[in-house]
Length: 234
Image (cartoon, rainbow, N blue to C red):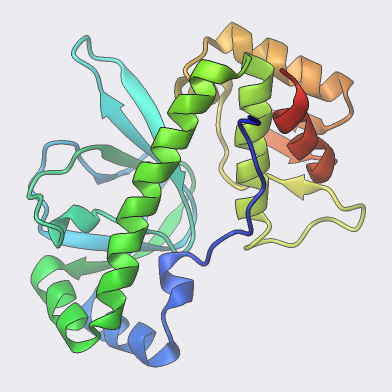
């Protein structure tokens, strides 16, 4: 069975709300700016508010017992963060750090719960967001077991390209610049591989003519080809 299958990008939390719901949520929260490397959420803190990213990218990390930070996910425009504040958990399970300047909407948990009570159909959206993230984690775990390093990286880059194109159109030649400015170390942490493995995998994808790279910059030159590489290279 192929470890990667392309699926239509789903609308992020904010995009799935109608204009009236967006207006009500803005009235319940306050805008906030976060500079690069600023923490939005700390692992272990109490959950007393939710955050919706309006612009920019952040990484989600978890600290291991030996003090290493493991990249779990990347969040971007339209994403809901810290939903545990309204799903029963009172402690943050991970740290979220800005990868680029971020503009966000911060909503106190009590006000967000009140908003959900007034718009009960959004409860399902919050729940499905949480479930989708569990599914994404499970799918990546399976890919780590069944796929080689270059294949896992191709899968990850294809997903990031599909996400990035929702917020910035492809270049005239069809190439897509991946939005989150991730380092090789961060990519390796996310795909459970060493920096050396990531460097070799990037070289392999460049030789295939699928990507172009620069400092914290990856441009996907052939997204269909990258999908096929992720799916077929066993």
